Length: 333
Image 1 (cartoon, helix red, strand yellow):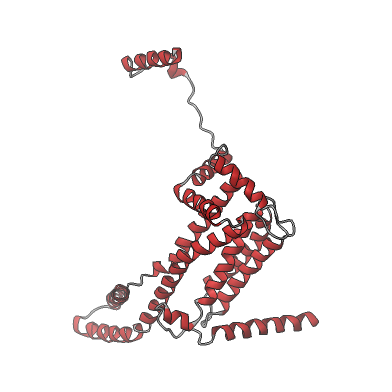
Image 2: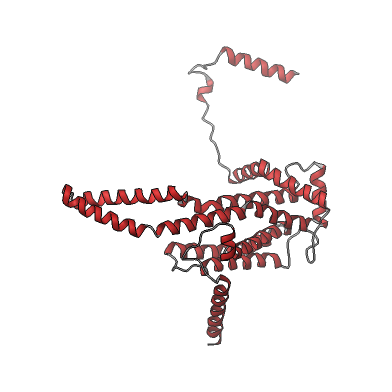
């Protein structure tokens, strides 16, 4: 009560003197310096993310699935991961493959359009006395317009080829934070629901990991994560029918490095989180293999293109077999 009165009194004084005198003692005080704290910034971002609405929905959804199904927590995490990826990332992956196929199909129409544009440009140079620079500008402008018309016609803007990343990365982050919240009893450690979930995680493991809060000291899950991610990268690299560009080669090597880096990271997090990462990557491996199948691609409406492998699984098997054979030959030498 006394503090409130003091606040009101100071507020009244500020109200009557909104502008301090320039010669007052306050003007002689040095300006307050603002110090940047990296740890405080990271903590603030983490707290905002852990208390966000998407994380809350996923976290409570997993708790509800566990409570109503009666399944152990390791099974709950696996089923929740498969369910979310089936309803979120699989449709996005199918849509992305449709966009990529449409872009490849309209690129086949460009040679004929280029031939017509060159003929029209040559005619315009003679009729309107265009210079070489003017002709080049008009040719490039017309070519870009024709390409944009094809993109609009097929509704396949190149930016849509990144739609899978726009959905998969946020989902991976949200579910990872939600599982981490369960381990840390966030966002409210005093809540009974959080304490019960934490206790059940300590008892809801499997096999060599009975306690999902602890690390996987056997390193089975972290190593499996690295191996699965490397297999996904090699499948994507070896399923191309065209020589990779320099940029594609750089990204492939970058992702290979990240897959190896993820092994020690996965070894330093609770095994329930590592289990989620392994399940998500395993689903991604199956998803990539499924989308290579011509029969499945026709079933979901992905157009047939020339770069599509007629027998993708045989091609991959032969490619990996040849690679292991060469590796074995070099090791013997």
